[in-house]
Image 1 (spheres, one colour):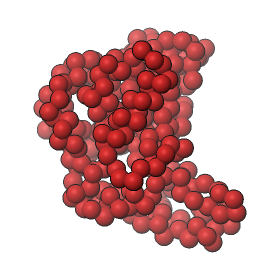
Image 2 (tube, one colour; image 1 turned 45 degrees about the horizontal axis):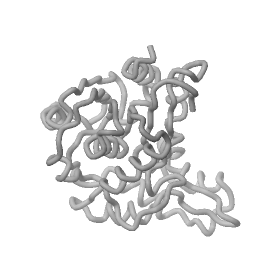
Image 3 (spheres, one colour; image 1 turned 30 degrees about the horizontal axis):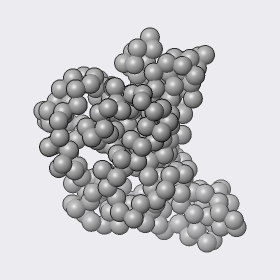
Length: 261
C-alpha cells in the first residue's frame, strides 16, 4: 500500500501473516497514502507463501531478500520485523545489506531463546482441533480452548476452508516438529553464522515492550556488536505484541524513523 515515499517491508511473527501489520502500514503510509510505500510479507510457512521442508533462518532471509529485490529492483528498504520476523529482518540486513537502508526490530534479540516452550500450549491446541469434524468457523472457535480472545483470534486466523473441509494455513507440522526438538529448536535459536558477518552499518530502531521479557538489558551488547547504530525504544505498558498494544506509539516512531514526519 502507498503510492510514494520510502519503501517499508513488514515481517510478522510466528503463526502470523503479513496482514497483521495492515493498520500500522496504512497509518505509516499517511492519510493520502503518499508518505511511504509499504509491503506486507507472508514469511515462508505462513499465509500464502510456500512451505519449507525444514526451518532455516538463512532460508527465510533469502526468500524475503528475493521478494524485496523483485518488488523494487535496485531500491533499498526499511525492513520492520516482529519476533520471528525480527530475527529474519536482522538476517536480511546482515546478509543482504545492499537491500536494506534502515532496520526496525520489534521485541526480539539476536540470541538463542532456548526452546519454544511458551508456544507449546498453542501448538498442542491447534493439533488437537479435529479439522475433519468442524462444520463452521464458529464451531472451530467454540472448540478451540484458549482463554485469551486475542490470542484465540490470532491463532485461528490460520484456519482456512478448503473445499468441504478445513486446513491450517501455517505449516503447523513443521513448527510442531521444531518445538519438539526442545533446546535444539531452530526457531527459538539464532544462527551462529550471523555473528561472523560484518555488522550492519545502517540506522536501526529497536522497539521493546516494557512488560515483555523478550528483550533484556544484557542483550544490548550483542545487539550493538551487530548493529552499531542501534537506538532502543521501550514502550511502557506494552507486551510482546507491542504494535498491537501501542499502535499509535509504534506508528509515530516508524514515521519519524523513515522521515515521513
